[in-house]
Length: 572
Ligand code: DGT
Ligand code: CA
Ligand code: CA
Ligand code: ZN
Image 1 (cartoon, rainbow, N blue to C red):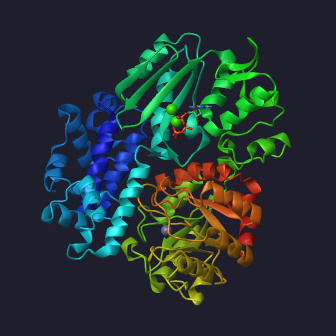
Image 2: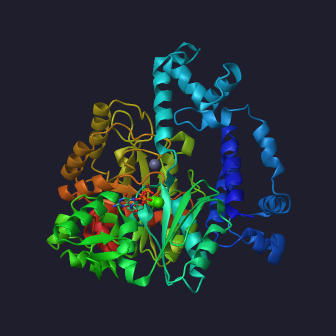
Image 3: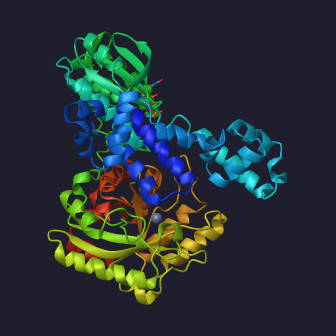
């Protein structure tokens, strides 16, 4: 039995419950269980065989009910309640509801009333201008639907970073058990920390590949085998993702790691540099004629060309060769340098854990400080707090801060930027907060000029310190809102506003390229998780990867500062 299959079922149950507008805690419980199962690193069936239901219930997020569902799945290969749930919905509706910009209500209407029950039919109707004639539709909605279909198409076949990383970790763990495997290294876009991943590329150093290949193609996570060779195999995993495996000898390690890490454009440039010297580079090494003259380590690959080592995150043909030739590759910010997390939610709004639980989990991560930043009143779906409730929350944070030792807890808020650019809390109250984050959570479809003016106006409020998840995008789900980021960054510089890199794998926003621009302009970055539960505090690593891809060093990131200096930075 494969953990991921069951995790997938739990995820779909959560989606279906959401379509039914069921209790959000119940929905969240399924999502949470799915996530924990995916990251388990141990087979559920093994746990059940050794420790029974009690063993399952020891997994975080798995209570009595869910443990029974897991047992049912282990014993029968299915979950009856899931099948029943699916049958409650008309054919095609679920797929439609997953199209960005198309809610469950519209999907239901289309599937039931108009017999539009697949994305293909929907696209045909929209292109023919037929959707706009349906009651309650109109040209604007039709256009949005076409945009949603487009977004879905573009993201098809690509996976979010956390899902790819979890799958790769499982494969790596299995391969590392083999004594033949001297080194196991995930390469490709995953190693470069790209925001979405097409497929997983794994490199193994070994002199014999037979058992490595056998193990790889028969992993429980494998759905089918595309190719099985002596040096190269490819499989499709049960989550639909492809994984490629390459085995090379130790003397080729550096060259192979470099080649499979890419990017393609970066590799092509290295090949050109080799040609200029009359050499050849391949995944097996650097060669002069038939003689290998380098390639055992990656440092050596770069060294042969007189280049400083280029970290994987920078290998995108964005100036890394010029910088490396001059010895100007920055020392990129590292996860271990992050001293705190300045954006998270609690049970006061749409979070799952209390202030204290968040603080303890953050302390466990070794942080010096956190900020509790619940939503404000206009974000109603997230249970945003009005002024009175915000005051109460500040009081609670301060009380908890006194109680919990070893970590500073700042009282903050993620304040909505209203459509006119004013903020969702009065200045009198903003003044009381240790940290004011400002976000756009409504009227996403404003024209670019208006949206930019809205955001820049918010920057002029003297209490705002950080502009959070700046483009509002959700990868594969929601396009970024129209915003002139150049103008926004210029304004951030002028008004002393910091910009967030949101570590959630569906956001990763500010993006890498714009991080680099922010650095050029001298705009400070804050890397946050926006955690809605204690386990999401772990997402920080993905934000750090994005910051690294944006060439940021420790001094470019405000939350690498020790508490005292951070507090100075937060004063304007
Ligand atoms: P992905 O999988 O679309 O997220 O992106 P990558 O970068 O992981 O690309 P992938 O899996 O096709 O190939 C992995 C690496 O192998 C790639 O980053 C560079 C290298 N590579 C693949 N194909 C070529 C090629 O045609 N020429 C060169 N120079 N390198 C290649
Ligand atoms: Ca890849
Ligand atoms: Ca590949
Ligand atoms: Zn937000």
